[in-house]
Image (cartoon, rainbow, N blue to C red; front, top):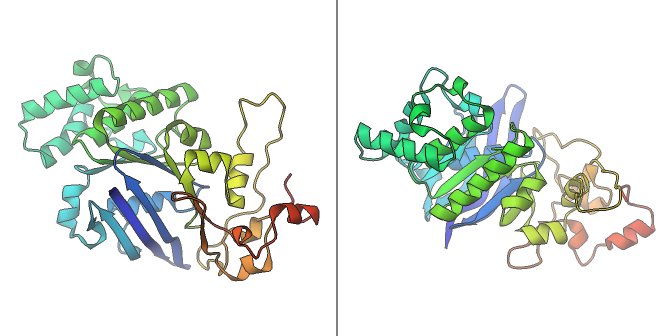
Length: 339
């Protein structure tokens, strides 16, 4: 059974320039105890999707226009603010990208972690403090009793991120949304944070949605991957399927732009030419068509259907249609740009 099920989610924002269609029919599932990574360039709709799940779309300019977000089979888009607040922080929590903007600089770290425990759980202040110290130890902060009474500026960047993780874990949530949790950290600390998340998941059997643009992070921690582009999931599958047998040109482009550490030969990294489409007026066809080296006329005018390759692997690309030319044929006639 799926812990979370997102069906045809559409989110828009009203601006002076018009309506921005940030998320356009996103669907995916998260099973209990698994990690799903949502990857893509900046502006593709990853963070907006996570904000919609948390019920944090800013109003009145932002709005979930249609779709379902089923958490434990209940559609949380239909819940009142009061009922949503009971779920947010207690059953679904979020780890934000920049710990310095997530933490209140005027409050002691212990008080910030204790806040959600006192709000969502029936515990005394003494019991809450005891749990906070246990959480600080769990996330690898030494001398937890002393650190409890310190302010965020007294912590290093990596330690602040551990505090943010402790806040997310405070009420034993079933689902953790990690929005680029390692982006602001150096490589060594990134590895420690990823190991910490994997360890916590194994101990608590929680599910994780990892929002990232780093495919190295995806390979390290994820079970499944959803590739987003211009507000649409263009490909989804297991980590093995996405890395070894990708079916969408955008996924190919992402993989070509990442260095291969196990390769003995020097390979030139190939960027994806062009820019994402304007979401004030999204294209009628495939959103990647203007940047795709294999684009056909049908790609520009019609959105491709979803093609299934296994019970978990699917992609939306006309190249996978039986009526389309194969990639080899396109290369043979000189249609491709990136070799």
